[in-house]
Length: 281
Image (cartoon, rainbow, N blue to C red; front, side):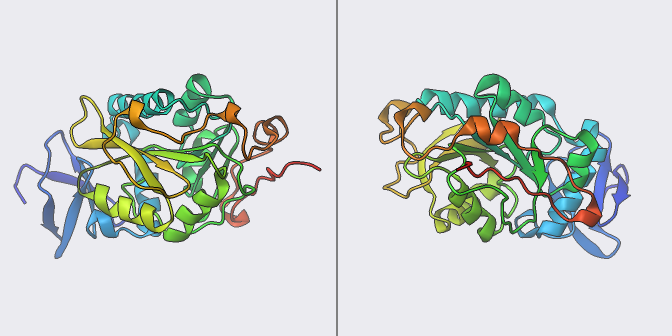
């Protein structure tokens, strides 16, 4: 490690102090640490981070937002995700912002896609700090506190580069509408193929994949709830079998569900909160 590199310790993590982009791995205190994002070092290869370490990373990002997060990249990537949804002819009525954090991405979804957005995150600290609207804390492996078929679209912004546990990916599958549910996510770098393998194992079918203009190494993937023959690099006008919210199929009474859910962040002693999004009889 060069003499000009300085670090700030945060639990088991190290944050590079300064604007220098560090090497992919460093030796520090008798152990090897691996670069995650540009300035953060973690004690295992990023692909091997367990949910507890991911939560530690999320809480560091919360306390060091100005240092760790590039809001311009986040905004550009989310705009690309929304563009994919629109250009595919999808008009989701009910959206889940998976990994909503402090809720900024959910607010963008409310403005750009639908006012009917619920959020969830495993980081109690993120939800407690910002208290985003209609969001709940969930355990890393689930379950999700939503009825089956609740959502037309799951939106996962800067989430899938983490190793999401298989039971949670299955829960996302359960909570999307049969016959037309989709998941849109971004991913980048070496994490793309491992994440895609996990998605396929959870019975998600890749409908399309496009690069993010101006953000090197990032892709936007649109997944279908029901597996079919994949065409991972097809143009938008080649995609068949997609449904908009107006096409019918399995839908819930959204006016009596997501907009009116009394979802509040929970205290650490309470565990996690639940939302009853079942359709009243």
